[in-house]
Image (cartoon, rainbow, N blue to C red; front, side, top):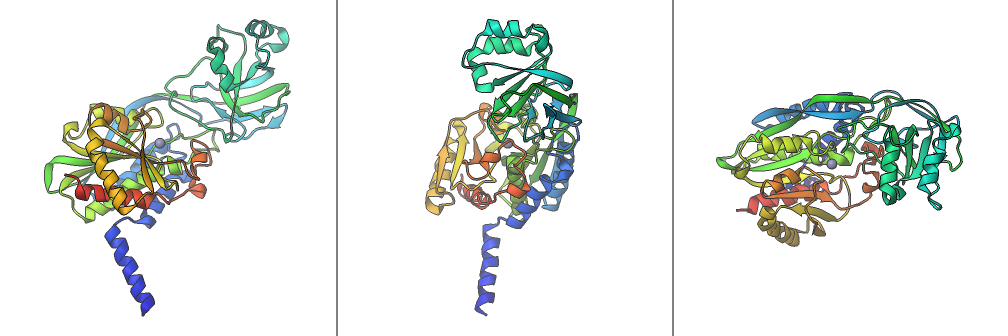
Length: 418
Ligand SMILES: [Zn+2]
């Protein structure tokens, strides 16, 4: 009997708190699955995920789901991805990744190591003219390249130096970015780990890129009607991620940002059940990892005037377990931030909130520059952060601790904000 009572009480608590961990996990798992291939472009993963989200919002009971198309130019790696060093096969995502703006490459190339201890630019450019280094790939410490930017710019240009490409050494696990992928540069550029052999003779590569011009993707916008329509709350999270590194490897992005997307889906389900005073919009953006393309499009084509937004919550990477919650807040959002702090001090959803300087690193930023009261919620670095932008940010490594406190913080805020 006692057990039953506790069970009943537990059910009541879940109902009162509103968040739904099972629903949240189901959406994170789905978005991180093979079906969506890392929610990139060439294999249509992002658009497939967008279609899934439309259905998921409808299932959540929202009143309306809209689709907002926009176009982008993006370099991708959906095909061949073979690299060997002195005949030894390398694994994409682990032993090497491409730079987002790299062209493909095919052939066998000698290696030329840049001596960073006795750096001599003239000697390097002379050496590269020698027949034994014809079409060489230069191997260099990436951080070091910052000290000699002009020389390295030359090495990257077709008419700057005769080398065929560059291997930059970088820390592990290797990261992949998409932010500067709107173009393709002259020469292939790859990331390799610091453990890359110090004395290898050559590499063989067969790597394909595919540049997509005017590729169409879309934001998914769901609406829950309140009793008042003169103002609204907006919840945003990007659902795109980094896509593929060849046919077999993809970036699942469980933390970045299946976590935030799943959070706004469960918030939509909650408010469809608990009708709000003001209208609510739940926007799942595409193109964020390709430099905020979905949200930049949205602020120029809003479905309701930006001035009507009472408050906007951008949730990106909360799939972690740091007890401190990182926030960025627009100037217009500072009055609301005082309430966030007050709520958190009373209810201890997080040990603390830590507010940092506004930066253009997620979808709140275009809204902040348009004077919308907004907050960016990202968990401080916990166990999941080491996987950021690597192939290991996947369902197997997913962390769930910050979901419930974020949900409660936002819900309490909406209850009290005037
Ligand atoms: Zn993100």
